[in-house]
Amino acid sequence: MANPNPKTDHLRKNRGKRPKLNNSVVSMRLSQKDRQVLDEIAIEFGCKYAGKPWIAGLLHEIAVGNLLVVETPPSLKLERQSRYDNLLSV
Image (cartoon, rainbow, N blue to C red; front, side, top):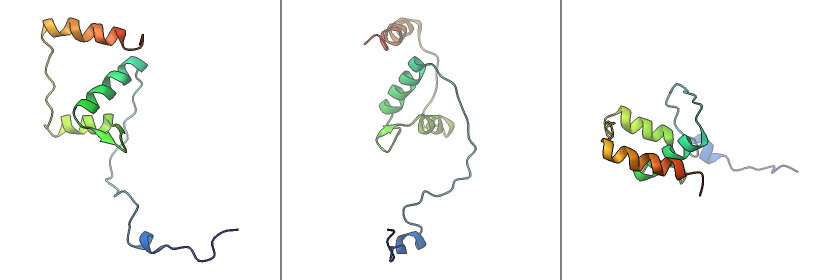
């Protein structure tokens, strides 16, 4: 049986609700490897939501200029590629 006297005061005060930001929705299809790499990058830069990696937060930081995307120097490209190739084999 449902609670006949539910406490709803917090709902009237807009507690427990995320503010509506009127953001648009963007959908992406990623390979599992790419998703894991983006999750790692998000964690490195503190982009988390509810304790989990937050790719949308990572993209937001790039959009507002807090993170800068630059081309990887050739010497680091090989290192990053080997990490990427070994990511799912672990």
